[in-house]
Amino acid sequence: MSTPGPAQSPVQPVEQGEPGNTRAPQPSGFESPKIRDMPAEERPRERLREHGAGHLSNAELMAILLRTGMKGESVVAMATRILSNFDGLQGLARAGYPELCAQKGLSDAKACQLLAAIELGKRVASLRNDDQVAISGPGDIANMLMAEMSGLEREHLRVVLLNTKNQVQLVHNLYVGSVNSAVVRPAEVFAEAVRWTCPAIAVVHNHPSGDPQPSPEDIAMTERLVKAGKLLDIEVVDHIVIGRQRYVSMREKGLGFES
Image 1 (tube, rainbow, N blue to C red):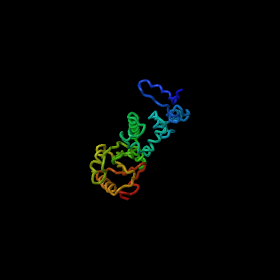
Image 2 (tube, rainbow, N blue to C red; image 1 turned 180 degrees about the vertical axis):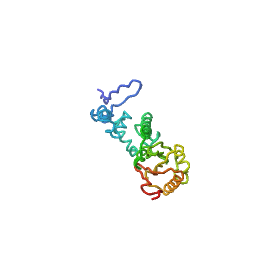
Image 3 (cartoon, rainbow, N blue to C red; image 1 turned 90 degrees about the horizontal axis):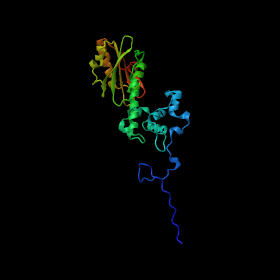
Image 4 (spheres, rainbow, N blue to C red; image 1 turned 60 degrees about the vertical axis):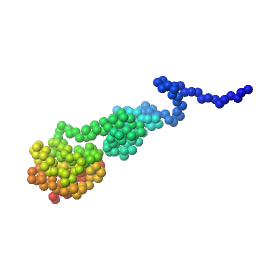
């Protein structure tokens, strides 16, 4: 009488469209978490509809854009991980297409969706209402440009043109790259103000390092612009240096402005 051989495991059915592909059953702990399995009151879309977008965390808003997670990781967990990898929204806003695609779980389409959303956010932040923005102090200038300029990887210098009521007429992006007293020419800084016959301007530039403390070059540049403005009868109301969600008013600090 022959001894029976070891019992054979049943062959798993082949999935349609993948001939010859046999798949062992996955353990239950490997099932991909799905948003629809979450309690309704915790799902990002439902929370947005019920409470508004302002009540959602950054990860939840990002999860709505990404739509799906990956095996073993829900879309909210994946969004949280990616935000952590970039040290939050500021880092994510600086990331380019290759950096996003290198993130586990981010396909080409998802990377493009994130980049598009970030760019739209930057453009909305730079828009002005039909009613002209009135400037009453350095905080108004900083808040108008902070969202966009604090995330820039290179130095930008912008000139804010003001009318006699301190209302913003135009924000002119003048320099990209090195912004210092040797490069910035007063004639170029005041050119648009002369063209628009504006009596005052504010100068704003960013420090990509995140530290808004003015450098000696920033102070020298401010002194030159203030003197040139007096000759043109155009007041330089302030020079704002923007860092990472922080700013310094050089007029408030008495740097480059006569006391």
